[in-house]
Image 1: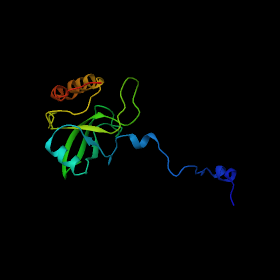
Image 2: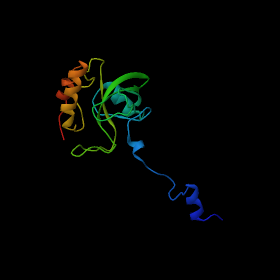
Image 3: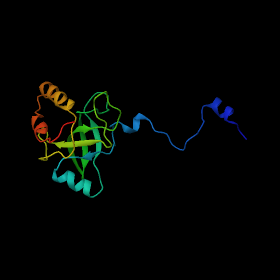
Image 4: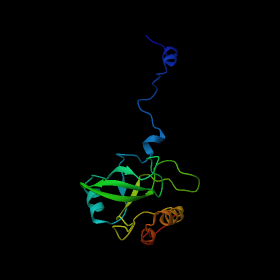
Amino acid sequence: MISIRQLSLFGCIVRNQFHTTSVYAEIRKLARLRVVDNSEIGKRAMAEGKPPKCIHVYNKRMVAKLGDKVLVAVKGQKKKAILVGCKQRQQSKIPQYDSNNIVLIDDNGTPLGTRIHVPVPTILRTTLKEKAQSKGTDYSKLLGITNRFV
């Protein structure tokens, strides 16, 4: 019989059957996301229980934060999306969501849906305006279809 002291020397103490770390809450490749707009393809995917998966994150770290653009696979198609809600721990005064929420967009930044069903953080206004000026895309329509800000 091996004691806990001997196991700790080898660095393999197992107290719980599973562990949770912040890695599981980040948006990386193959992360499942939730479409929160009323686009037709997003509604069908969520109704069938096949949520979109992240294929690519458009930044250097390959970990998406709030307001980042991601490429997702929805119903066998590739679509671009903006991350509007995140599970991972946020900075102060930024709300933390229960699910990773996205809004599907076109190549030029216009949203595919006409309404966003969840509240969007107010910091997203400044984040998307800065990205619009540097990248040349227009995210003002995405902010325009948002009903509620938190």
